[in-house]
Length: 254
Ligand code: MF3
Ligand code: CO
Image (cartoon, rainbow, N blue to C red; front, side, top):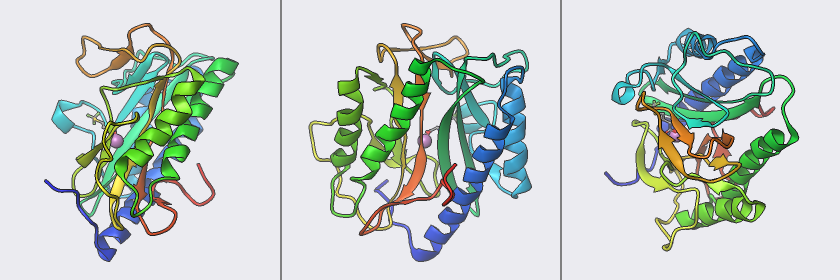
């Protein structure tokens, strides 16, 4: 499959999908506090997705058993929600959500602190977000894919963090995962030329320690080998001639 270029009407659907997903994230963020379970977050996210008449795209994706990935502390991504996994003050929690609206996908992730968190955790969350925005600056028609990848790397690596290598961002549209793959580290090639109408999910996954990963026995949850904290930040973005449009953020930010 080649990298798809979305038409005007497809872009409208993706904008709408993204806007709704931004609200899903806002609503999930609103219930985070010590004492709730990761399944409570999944229930909230799925309810909002369905209220919008959308389909939770992760549910049953390659057998994934929930609508929201909820990953706590050393869990990087794909944490499976559980009734008996309860958030504690000081935890950090990454929420990854996706929905389908009229056949078009939106995909976004946020990392939140639970109650008061350490300065180290706060900085990790902020720097993960900032690395996304560094990459985004280069997500402009005429640039190459590696301009995004190396900008993320150039922000993260000098600060002493680890960049997860096994998991990458991706094109998105009528499929959750379309080409190209978008690593969060510098590639040794330019990669594709970015064009108007491409829609990309850019998603740095950053660790406070070593970037080495391990898959848990549930065969989904990816954790840091050294148990260091990890953060994830993702938006679906549209490439234009000028500044890229972030489809999964409301104009007020969220
Ligand atoms: N949100 C993930 C991504 O960014 C996909 C989740 S995979 C699932 O690519 F199986 F958990 F759904
Ligand atoms: Co994604």
